Image (cartoon, rainbow, N blue to C red):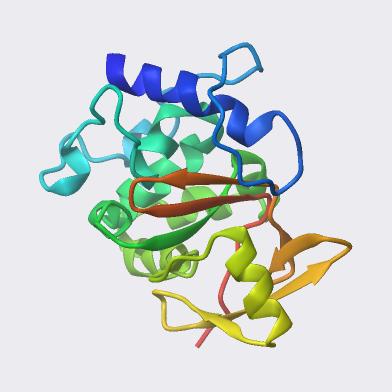
Length: 202
């Protein structure tokens, strides 16, 4: 936990000092209302996980996408969902990956009871499909997303779906949701969003 706390201190300002999508790399302090991960949805989280996802961040090294999410309470619902769906290793592999990471507030926008239902073991497959719809198996920093938008291309996601990307008033939108902040991680990029990108039912 000590190393995750240090990662949170170094990363926190990246995400929440503004609502712009800037790709910044300066160090941060921990005075911006961020909190470390609590035990929300603990009943849906496996007690132990073996594999790449169980490797803790090393002090002084850039965290991977999952380590970043686990270090910040603002992503506690996302972390619970990742663990309940059993897709941890999918977001910690060497990549490069691009993850559109919904804040807790994004999950709060879903119809009442949706999150609790998705976290149930019988819905593991459906939850995994929704989560992989937020992961692109490619390197997409903001400037590259803008290029893709200009060319009218869609982003291929790990779910097998394609998401549209566009630029409006200088901001980047993926599947209609605005990128609030971008953070470089060891295995790619994390773009913070405030909506859950739910794929159409098949």
